[in-house]
Image (tube, rainbow, N blue to C red; front, side):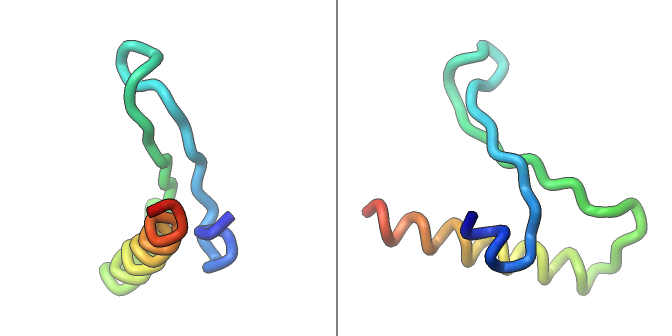
Length: 57
């Protein structure tokens, strides 16, 4: 929700290789993306994660 509010669509998931431990976020930018767009994507995702971290302590 926090990423979406910033214009990013990501897919959260849980369970890594063993199906239980680990969390991940799937990011699927277009194949044609500029460095500037990647920098913006990373900045917005960082803001969203930081927002959640502040809220959850």
